[in-house]
Image (cartoon, rainbow, N blue to C red; front, side, top):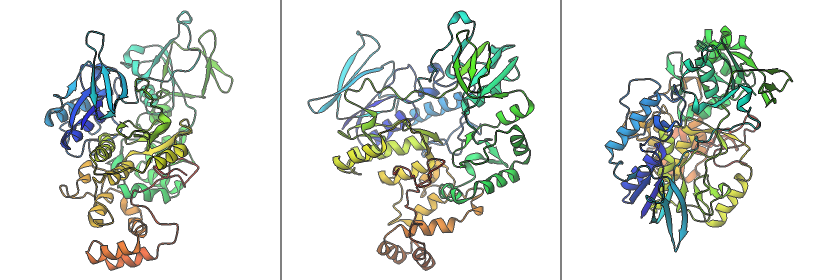
Length: 521
């Protein structure tokens, strides 16, 4: 097939790499003059000073270890890593830089892709399939009624934040209780005259390193599911054991969610100490701007600031250049239900994702390439339509996306991971290991146990997974020495309703434990 890849960030690069490896002819379009997407410093897609929440252990592609030494890479580290990846796998050759795509349309059985910065450079090419990887973190959300310039209040988005030194001696309000808001508010403290942080709801902020281990090394893939059965109070007790000083400060600030969801974590080690020490003052949720530019909060109070920094997330990706595409018609968030040769490699728009690093995009692209290559199949058109009707009706109803567990699910769908029905030993080695991408190739890299899996009942998880397989399949696994007789007996004792499908479904919302990845009730 001749395949167009739109975007040359992490998702676009792995899409191009895997499509070429499968024997397809690829042309990649990149609107900027360099690769990297938001990790290209010249694109201004990420705010200055950003560091990945994923560690150097978990962020890279499965077949390309990083050369940088930082435990949690910077903007420059990630950009350099992606360039190394492109150089190693010969991905620069198919990329047309400086070629924003302005139109995608199906004509006479093929996709027409039009790209170019101006009429003189615009050209249209025809393709058998299109993989859209234009990213979702480009258009920051802005509240209504932003103050006029004559009020003297500057309003900036997180993307426009370049250096904390630019705010010396200014009164600054940071809107947004997520990671970017916490990062920027923390960085402003030594420079600004005052830093107020407007938080709508309390979230669980944890440091990048916990008790001498990376935050993402605490539990394996299977452990991430098992920890959901741990009472939240017990989980907090573990944190107090691992982080006594941090948790003492956290409780004192009043920011610690006492009734929380310990799957969804915001990674930032600075904001809790900053609030505890008084450098950052937490204020109520933002309501609106007054006519004079002052900020009005939900408790009726108002304050005047020199600068307001908006860290309110991003608008959904712009697919307006794709003729006939509605987000509501994306089967499993990635395949156009009417024509699955049009695919989207971006993170689902209705989610707050954790662990969105290279392995996740590698898994999405791997599944798409497997389908396009005929190695994996999709349900029929009626089933795809039914899925979209059930899951894509309300994209404002946001859910939690565990990208590490999604990596397993997508890898099983695409056939790139060991099938537990035939290769249970290799499958279990993978899911009971750290979330290190090398473990996605279990035959090449020895497994590494996660730091705190011993606190969890992974044997129970193993047997619940086996219980989800048909009895005949379990007997065949025993005959091939993939499992032991003890496994067979334990799986038979798993209560009805406690079976755990091998794609490791997980809780996606605070209030509904029945919701599972890709299979929301």
